[in-house]
Image 1 (spheres, rainbow, N blue to C red):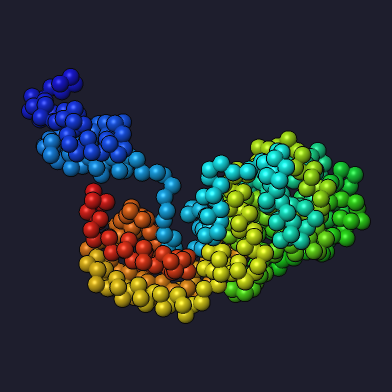
Image 2: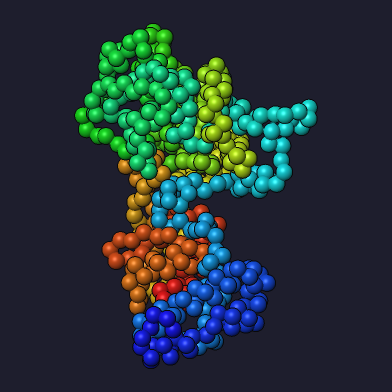
Length: 473
């Protein structure tokens, strides 16, 4: 063996099974029939390279039978898709790392329908080319009470395209207390730079008054923009003018008033004990010319940015060359249309939109589900104790900052493994479960678990003992 001068090591390396013996085994042939030759060959090389590294570190070479037994597991790991279904037991209903809003069943069904050939840009009545937004644009306008509506791929894109199409080369007045960072290190001043509009800051971090906006208006002013700080809260000695306060200022000056409300709270959050979140229709009703919001937060839909308001402004945005780069694909459009249709009936929305149903779930109901789960877990080998507790949790996803909801958790004390090991094992099970930790316990928080996943959650928790050794190895 080149590069080795130790005869004993060379001898051990020579005893490593050849790759072709692995790939020609009956087990490998069965795997190849399902997953293809390349996946099996890659798995064989990975197993052989790992075995070689172990021998070089002083270990003994494995038997061919041992490597063959590892083939199925290695192939499965290699072909497993990156995006997988998980159970969100963190308690954070809108968990950004877990995809924010889980879709309603109607939205999932619509997405599957659109996955094949569909009339994305075809008017079936005339047979001529149609608009890909024909399904969602009227619904956005209807739901938000606006003359016109449209959608792009997220709320940041909605802000960029609105500023670019309506205010490029001119000033837009924004309170210093609203210069937010929207996540991923993207900040509102940078959004302005990309759009070509010029940012004009007024007021202080905690206080902005109507007079501040009035003094800032000049010949180069195109608009006033109000940005709802949906991912943080400033408390204490604070003041910020409302849309109703700013609407006459903008009207008298002949400039636009843009209202970025962020979270898309179309439903009344007060019904689940979370008041104070502005809705996108509220700003329009108070005099804003245009409102912008997300679809994948409190609206409960797929990732998208909604734009609604004056028809002439929406049309100007649609005609901007950058609009095409921000357009939605057929799958998102289908899911968004289904979600918007559900919202036209508020009672149906509270039943069928998972985000709304989870936020409105009663503490009593959560405690009952937690008791059932805890009683079934107490017999598990890896569970030393399973105790039902009342806790508090956050909504998450850049919505309702600082607002907490009561919740019910099953606090699990692991036996024979650490909390970190148990949490890792749950993340790596066939159906990953994401949890939170407190006081050396794993907390299974049912506020973020849809009831139809309770049985799957229990099976995943029961599999910990069986999967623990393989996963930790």
